[in-house]
Amino acid sequence: MTLPHNTITPIPNNEPDAVPALWNTRYSEIDENFLNLDGRVDAREIEITAARKGKGSLDARLDDMASAISSTSVEMQNATVAALKFAIDQAALANYSIKAFKQQLQQEGEMTIQNKGIVSGCAATKSTTAARNLTLSTGVCFANGRAYAVADGVNAASVPSNTGVGSATVYAYLYQDAGGLWRVAVTAIGQQVPPNSIRIYNITVPANSTDATDPSLTSVILTDIRRIERNFPSRLNSPALASAVINGLSANNYRLDFDVVSATGAPCEAAAIMVFSRATNGFTVQLASAADNVTVRWRTSKLNN
Image 1: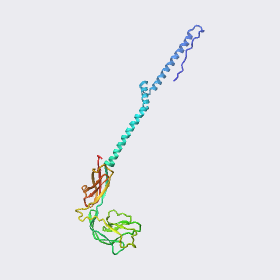
Image 2 (image 1 turned 135 degrees about the vertical axis):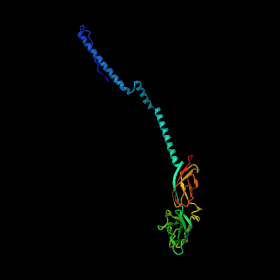
Image 3 (image 1 turned 135 degrees about the horizontal axis):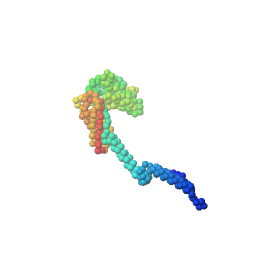
Image 4 (image 1 turned 180 degrees about the horizontal axis):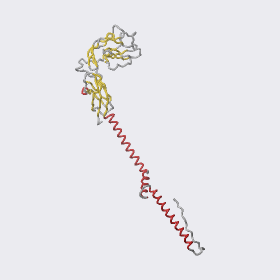
C-alpha cells in the first residue's frame, strides 16, 4: 500500500533573509509530513494484521506456513500413502474375516427329508393281457407319517415307447389322487417323478421299443427300487436320508446343530435328526422318526478352521 507524501520546500541560497511569514510556510509543510507519516504507520499495521491470518504474531503465522509446506513434502506424502495403505489392508483383512465367518466358520441352511415307502406289496409286473402295460399288486404304502392301503391295478400304467437311437430310463411311482387313493403311474421319457410321490421302479426302455416292435415289454427291464419298511412306524430298517453341501472346511470335525421347523404326521424332535456321514464339503443325515416332509434348519460350526 503506497501513501502520498509531501516535501518541505527548501530555502534557496539567494533567498533574502527569512522572515516569519516564510517560516510559517515551512512549519505547515512539516506538520503535513507528520500527518502523512501517521497514516502510513496505520496502513502498515493493517497490512501486518491481515498477514497474520488470525495468528497471534507473524512468527506464529510463519510457523503455520512452514507446517503446511512440510505436509506437502515427499516424505510427508510417502508417510500419508503408507498410513492409507495400512488402513486399507486392515479393512480388507477385517472384511475377509467376516466373509470367512459367514461362509466357512459358521454355515447355515435348510433341507427337507422325505420319508415315504412301502410296508408290503405294491409290486409291478409286465401285463400279459395288454400291450406295454404294468399291473400293480395290492399292498400298503406309507407317507405323511401314516400308512395307506393300496389296491391292485390290472393294466394300471403304460410304459412309453422309445423311438430314439439310445436307451431311456423312466420311472414307475405311486401317487395320491384327489380322492386320497394311491395309484401307480409311469413317467414320460425325460420327465421326473412328481413331488410327494413314491418311486418304486426304474424302467429301462431300449432303443426302438414300441407297440409294434415290443408290445409285451420283453426287452424292457424293470429294476425294483422300493424302500420296504415292514415294521413301519415302530421301527425303520432303512431310515430316510438327506444330504447338504457346505463350503469346504479343513477337516470334518465340525459341529452340527439341527432345528426341526415343520413335519407332517408323527411328532419329530431335533434328536430324531442323526448324522449319518460327514465330509469336509458336506454331510448326510438320517431320520429316526415316522414323520414325513421334515424341514430341518441346520448349522455347521468350526471356529478353528
